Length: 111
Image (tube, rainbow, N blue to C red):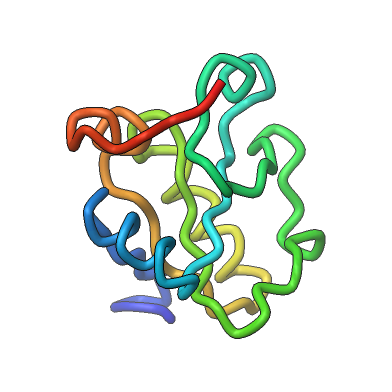
C-alpha cells in the first residue's frame, strides 16, 4: 500500500498484538536483524532474513498469514516493509519497537 505521493505505508503492531497473532498462527514474523544479533536472542518462530542481504523475492510463502517484520528497535523492520512494498508485495506491518518492545512486554525470547 502506498500513501500520499506514492510513499509506502507501514503499520505499527504492538508486541502484544504480534504475540497474539503468532499464537493464533495468523502471522509470519520475519526478523531482519543480523546473524550476530539473532544468535544472542530471538523471538521464537521468527524467520531470519538479515536486512544486509534482504531480497523481498526470497521471502518464504506466508501460507495465508500476514507478514510482520521485526528488528531491534523498529527502524530496520520499517525499511524491510518498504522494500517489500517497492517490490510489489502487500507486506506492510512491523513490530513497533522491535525486540526491545517485545522484552519490555515480558514476552519470551530464545537464544
